[in-house]
Image (tube, rainbow, N blue to C red):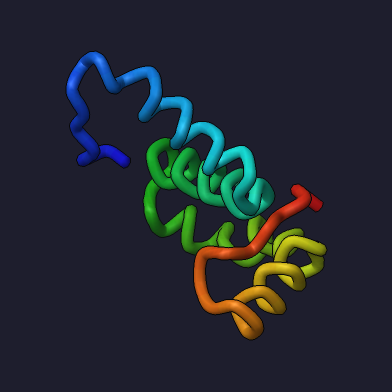
Length: 85
């Protein structure tokens, strides 16, 4: 996303498309990514590495992980529907 460039007249449409994609995505995984990035920026990469198992633990117990894996096995990548749980 950082490297995406669109004409100014397309900016709002492109922004909303990305926002909708994130909102429909694996929100628990997105939250973990944000938390690990925050830790890395503020406390260093080693601290983020150390926190990884703790931060990712809720993902492994989530309905989203099960749904994503089942969808991947059945339909291939990129077609999973996530509930944020």
